[in-house]
Length: 169
Image 1 (spheres, rainbow, N blue to C red):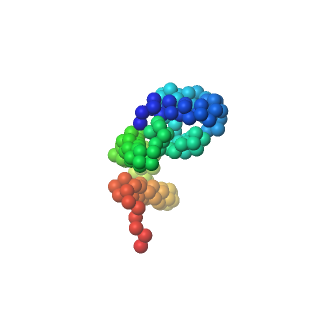
Image 2: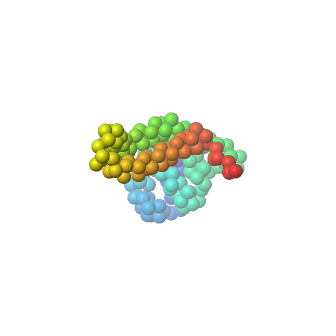
Image 3: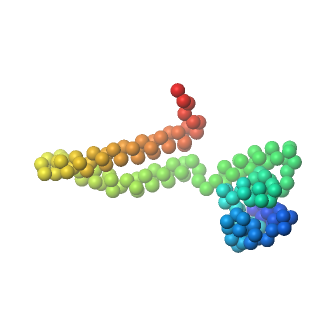
């Protein structure tokens, strides 16, 4: 997407509507500086603002991303191009997201893993006073650990490896 073209298009549409940068920003919940950055091509509007911005300016999201008004034929062609560009320019690839979430999961569960290892050592030493305490602490942690691991497996299996939703039986 050509940010400069999109920015100029936003500025032209805003002026057609008789809105100042401040007025448009207020309607969208952003500052006039943010609107200025869009119009100068420094930033693109956040994805959650594209629909309300398009509605305020009287254009579709597709036209916003193209930076121009489109005929029906152009609209279909541009929709495909915008989708491909958006996917290519997304912040993270699937592999990068998978790597990030695996690293995050390990970091979030490091303490739990260490506690489980300590509990395992205490149980194997068979110190009678620690056996009950270890069971009382270890069992709930194992359940939490299992649930989180199951969730991560589900996300990886359904979202990343197999983008098709599972069939209902």
